[in-house]
Image 1 (cartoon, one colour):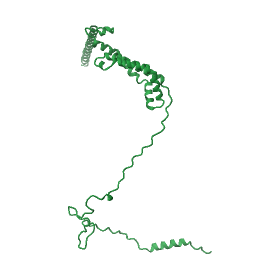
Image 2: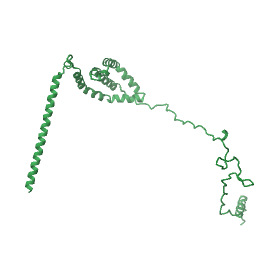
Image 3: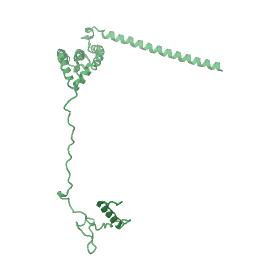
Length: 260
């Protein structure tokens, strides 16, 4: 059976392969690079002296570059850093869930009005701090606030439907976070008021009597009686402790006798 003649391209590959095999073999050991003459980086002349392309330095060594600052065209080219691109601001805000805060805001407003009114009434009577509390102006402000309370609550309720900060404020007021501080203040108010009356009472002006409170002498007598009761209690506790200690010592001595 006759054999088909090989493709001409295959014959060309065979010829290239045969030529590669006939080429001389590569040297196994690579010769080291020529040694650099540090005293003559640009070579030497016919007399063996270093070629001074740029002259010499102050220490006598061959200068490798021109003296002075490099020309403007030869300076390294730097480009100003591109400004950081900030992500585009969101044009659409997340929609807030519709929630009506009207009723709780009205309650919170009433609490604020009541607290401010108490401060306006009692604050000026507090020793030292009273001069910093403008009682009449604060009371007048509370009157305006109480009159405008429905509109203020409606305005904050409207803002809370569209703005996250207003929503957080409305939630705080509605959850009663502002109420506990005022409640605490109301509980302290009687003590503050009575203390202010004590310090404001003089021989000519009995503020305690005006507020239907016990006089200075009676209050001082009550405190003396309470102090006597405290001393009696302490004395009784000390006697009881001494008796218990004596009984413990007797019990310990009896135990030692029985062991003997």
